[in-house]
Length: 458
Image (tube, rainbow, N blue to C red; front, side):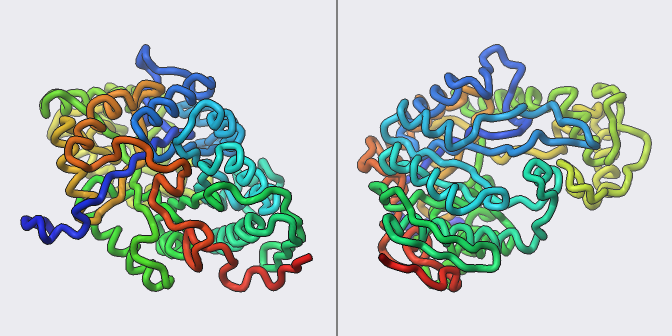
């Protein structure tokens, strides 16, 4: 798919968009480094957001965790242990930043439209039009127990509720002072919205589902897709082509969505230095305890009594269960994975931890020099494979420093990145259509799918 003639490049003037993903529960952030900061202290959020704004990023993107994750009925204590409410945290950051967008990951399964629409509208007003909403769903019982609902929502119903929820929220955002009545299979609402539209009209809608249903939902509803397809160029281009086809089927312009894959970025002064740093990052991410936990997901066994620096377990993996606890039902071909791991461990003399480091679940990412990465990203964005990246720093709160101080100038030298903010709202940063411009995506001021049967104007 490589093009050699510049005249064939479809987007010769495109610029890269960058966001930062301050993750929720995860084991990819390095906790052991002396420079690692608290994941719940306000200073960590403030420093990351202000560094991203100094680097002219589009958005600060906050993850969500509604319940501490569990494995085998026990708390999975290798991840972030609890986070402030996303909208509350972002409202605090609105007062500590001036331009950067503020994106909340908030669940449609365990919230209600009238309440959440008002809270998001409040964030949008307080930030003067910088709010975004990453629309996510949940069907697992262990999270639902917090809400006295258990796993009440069938998996197939997640996006039905999400789409009706989002349409109701948009009706509420558009209905200041009027009575908004919503009738659907999921909702029966009569509400008189109390807040006016913000400078950008509506919060920008993000979506991260990668299934066929998730992609269709995004094509009908989203402004931005937070995808998993940004490491390999051909994979990213194929994903972008698929989304554009779905946009056409949804009667939306092909450029109506921004595709921002999640990624990590490791920078070195030379390629060799960058690769050495990346190897260090990977080893620090897979601590001995993490290696045992990750291998335990493959074997579907508690391996905490094993030596991470010893050999792989001699026992066979147990069949996956369907308990809906974190990590269950993820490994469906465990026998084949274990055979491959054993073959590679024997060939290379790897310990259990070495095997997980080399063969286990990996972050999506890019490694290189500032100049090399800038050239690489220029190809990705100008050939239409992506619109930018949502960066997950491997170290908090200092993980963006190299990107802002080294990569951003290299991108700017090539005309691939803004040299100043030219707008004030998140919608303007992303180059999206106004929220009231017509049917489809960010422009959807009305309601899809016949959700709102009537709206009384008084």
